[in-house]
Amino acid sequence: MKNVKDHYYLKAKKENYPARSVYKLEEADKRFSIFHKGDTVLDLGCHPGSWSIYAAKMVGPQGKVIGIDLQKSQKYSFANAAKMELVRGDIYDDELFEKLLTEHFNVVLSDMAPKTTGHKFSDHLKSLELSRRALEIAKNVLPAGGSFYCKVFQGEDFPDYVVEVKAVFRKVKVVKPKSSRVESREVFVLGREMK
Image 1: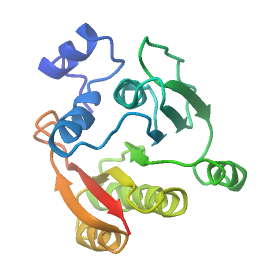
Image 2: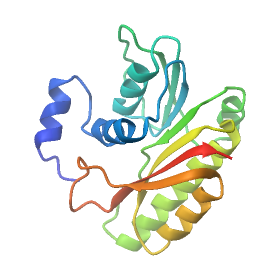
Image 3: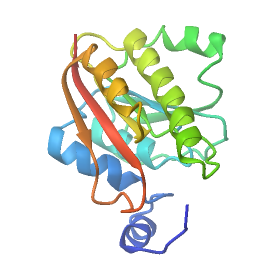
Image 4: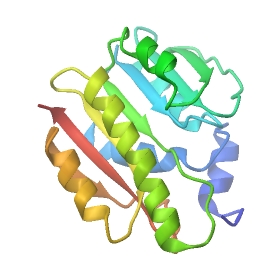
């Protein structure tokens, strides 16, 4: 992806977020109220930390944010924000999955993306694989009423994924944030009110 120093890139630097991706979450939260004070949030693919930082600010000091990524993320701490726990780990690791089952989450986020090859269909399938794993985790750790916000690359199997999310959540929206680059095939699927 081009490191274009666009409006959102500059805004992120100014507002002390490590990446412009924070606005893809903020926009959806402003429209759909994903977070509530005191929530516990799981952020899959959290590196470099923008989504975790935003979530921590939104849920406040009574809340909690656990971020997981293959890469080590820098720890951040802010006044009037939730405690953040950033874990270096693999979402396919059974031991890590078992640990997640012991937590009570209200929101599961996923900004995970595969290492892209430039081959659209192959990248789409790899993205779907990660998104399906995120949905599987959400199904196991969220209570009734919980929320899910997940990045997916569009492609021919994308409608099937939306159907899978609809089987789990009462309200489902496909979101293309303004801060998402025009040429990008990424969209976000928002599931609210887990059944």
